[in-house]
Length: 224
Ligand code: G3P
Image (cartoon, rainbow, N blue to C red):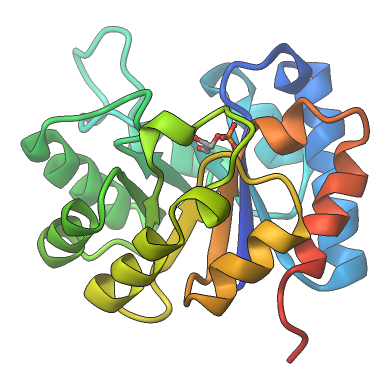
């Protein structure tokens, strides 16, 4: 299980194509390609599928969100303490579609770290990402301009200056980018500007052939 860069993290969101048995099949496609290409691929599954995904594949499985609580009298929460023993490796936090107040990010990071889990904090701007890095020291900051999420135009095409600014402010080796990412060229541009990985959703999940898209995405990483 590798959570090193370069890395592609596919966020399954609540897409039907990435729910239940579809989620497991998609996860296995990621696993096969990760092994074949020797590239780090990770997935962020839906809460209801996390246990199955963690048991079903050897690549990193992340939650899309966790709640900053532990075992106890907490109704309808998703605590890291419950996820870790199931084999879940970490979590996204503060995704644009699941924003959190700063105090909750702080507590969620503490609970994840106490469980030895990975932390990816999403940010909408470079300065927000910088602030989160200073405050919470996550494994990665994922920069995603909200207006480009789920769209046809990628962050690499529309906002290359944002990627550069984020890398300058947050530091080499720490920045993932996402929103509208569809192909290897998007990955090539993002990594040339200093990003160490990609957070992607619709481009993979909604593709007719997700494995072919993943393969193309991975081709954008410079061979070392
Ligand atoms: O978490 C990844 C995401 O928000 C980007 O979504 O569909 O633009 O790849 P998408």
